[in-house]
Image 1 (spheres, one colour):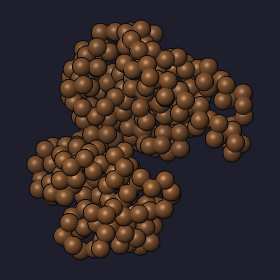
Image 2 (image 1 turned 90 degrees about the vertical axis):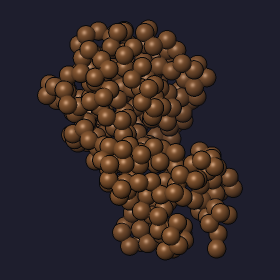
Image 3 (image 1 turned 180 degrees about the vertical axis):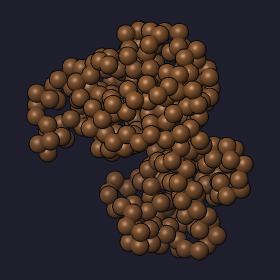
Length: 296
């Protein structure tokens, strides 16, 4: 396995392209937007410069990593020679299924098709193709160059050979792959998202304030970041989307998203990406400032 194509050049896509290119793979980074691709390459270069400054890599490694990345705005051109395609497009079922139908048509028959989805069923994605045995989940964690975990998700029809190959290629990146089965939220989000939702419910019901809830989890449970701050980083829209997947997938009221989360997303308070969520992110400092909506 030498040729990797990554679909989508956002935060996750450029991170996945970065780690594969740094590990010596030839990477085609594909996005419909040329501007997005230019930003992605700049981000990768900036992250590599940071690694050089910290003496984690040398200048030659930085240059070879960048040389291993080719950008494409045309999907067919970008995936024709791929041995493995990793889709990291927006978390929207219809868009993902369309991409996988196209990938099925454009790639060679032996190519493995992986999705970086954090919640959409791999079995459903595989069923949109004529090669469900070669469709698998590769759920990288953000930021990809730093976080060691890859959740490798078997769809109902994924073959053991494909799983073994994906586990092996993940290890070549210096990652720790963990094999899980295809049920709503997989493992990471099935555990993480209800915890975040419960923190929002605690705030909604007046049990404690934003700062207090996060402090309890940081100092009492040794979490490096409180659940409300983490929700802001993930994006409250993403949290809501995953809670809805859990709620619909299991039909259990314990997964119902908190009304406060629903209201915040509806009002456009999405966390870091919008400038405000449970905290304010527009002040230009590293200080944690609780949003005026939740100030006592």
